Image (cartoon, rainbow, N blue to C red; front, side):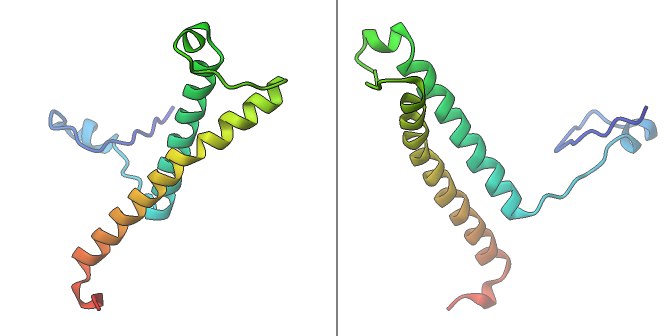
Length: 108
């Protein structure tokens, strides 16, 4: 069985077998941005569902009034969009900064 491992850095790998077992996978920048935005959205959604649906959230006043589960879920899903949009803006700016640094001739 061949196991592929994605490694960003590992200083203790020094034998030929260890070095040959590493596969470097290049991911397109736009895919990295989508992965980060998706992760941010899902983390925010799970956090909102956990806090607003638990007694602990109710104890500190963090509740969302909703008549049923679907309405409550839609409210949490819509609120979770805000951190995802901020993540999208931040990662887009990061990509633009890298582009600016690597291609100074493209500056206006």
